Length: 167
Image 1 (cartoon, one colour):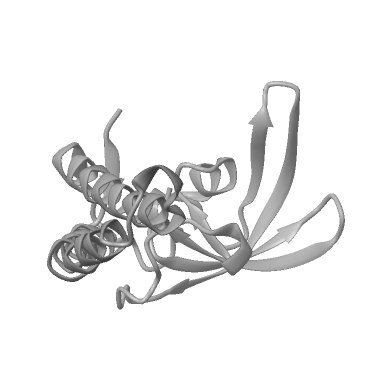
Image 2: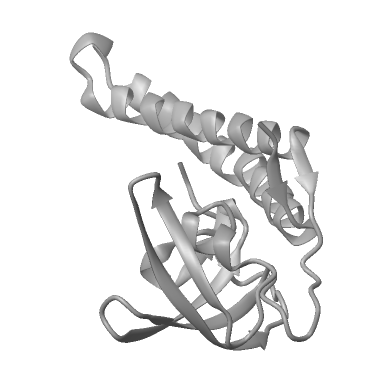
């Protein structure tokens, strides 16, 4: 499986890798050295905590590098009147009569609590390519789905301010 990422996603990941290698790695190594100097390592909580932080940082660097290596670059451009990547969409849920606004983003930026829906989520996948006024069936699984109506589409510029999701 390849990760679909925009060029902005790749740039943000490279920035995070550089920061983690130049700043976080240096601090983590210093913390390990300081904690090691406190004596008996078998009962030294600070040492074990510092090693854990160091290892988590290295793991995040490897994860981001793998994401970039396996990425498929996708365009965030879409037609003016159809749902595409980085568009803000107002959606009416027929089931409960509510209206919500979402921004369609790539998987690494998805965060439903902040209204950022991934293009790989059922809602995001189903909405892609539709126009305002379209009634769309969202299939959650083979036995359940629901209908939504696309009320409006706002073309938004990706300024890169959305945070990358940590795993």
